[in-house]
Image (tube, rainbow, N blue to C red; front, side, top):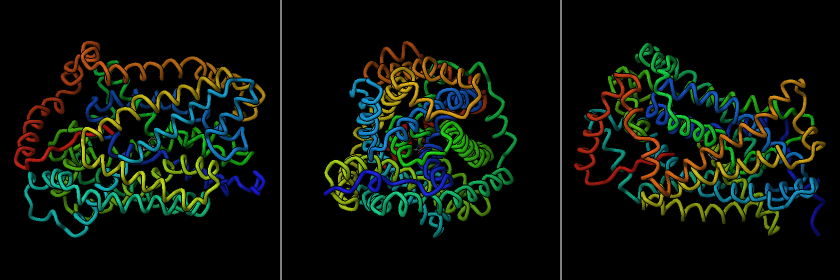
Length: 493
Ligand code: PHE
């Protein structure tokens, strides 16, 4: 006989545990690898200003909606939570589409995420054992292509990462997820601040700061806005049913608006501080900040190689990235694990291992084919995550009963509440719908996208110096790629 629901459903042991787990999910490779490359390609300060507005006005309200749905129900998985709250609100159970789409998207994300995290693991011994010593810049940069071209190596590193993720999820909400987040996140913050301080001292702090914080407002265009909003969603783990699931482990008495603001604030803080750890070094060597996905695995190692203490700095940076990646991947796996454990009544360990095997197979396909990697990344990131988030926000704004809503989203003064509902009902859905449509056009009608957002103006306008280096850089990269006779993929995150 099944145990009563109350004992089946896990709960965070404290507010600190919840905040660390939620921040752990949000803070990940998205803040380091993806944020830096997006900011770099979209004009630095211009992107950052729009990004901050997206987090504040759209991301944080959307977080509140997902937590509210999760906590409003005592069910054990996101799909059931939404179904349950929809029933109680006399709304169609089709609203559970937010959890279904989110859960499938989370599974897709964790597959390619594990490949990238595998690259991160591969770079730790490279720095720690001084394997870059004595190499030329080209040789260091070419290491990424070599790693990428070796399916065997990629699979070995990915396997380590998937095994780690499975192990933590199998240990459960308190002993696994919460434990990892409470241990790793504080170390992560400490390392990040230390690295940022070092980078500001040894790098070109002035150039980095003015590029990041003195926005060239003329560089803001619709394409920058779409990228910024997409990045905000990815970074806050929105639309992946994760925050609904984590919300369902939330005890009463924890204030949802406040927690959402803390999670959104900390996630943004990490992205910005990571930028301040990366860009001063990139600028100090006169390198271009807009080398995209290569920034993290090519530009940064080359830059670190030529600064004093670079090996130590590099080891610390990639260890930190690994911590961030693990606390995100456990959240990505937890969503489907929670659903299947409840549905099939199998043990958590068995389910986590079975899903881990699935991730391993799909991850290996991503490592094998850049096209497959890109497709998975684009469809999940540009279509599924925003779509699931849109459904969640619309549900809370328009269909959830007022009683349930007021019980979950509470503790704010009336005028703030009114603004919040304006955001939840109108602004956020409209903005998400726009990124969704733009993402779909970009995916399925690239020609049309190009005519809406001609590629040139942003790159030309955005700050003279960095933009000017772009062509040279691309040419150099192309040469390297030829030399290695291996294509370096350009994952967009
Ligand atoms: N937010 C995590 C990061 O920034 C990754 C993630 C993306 C998690 C999408 C869930 C959904 O790395």
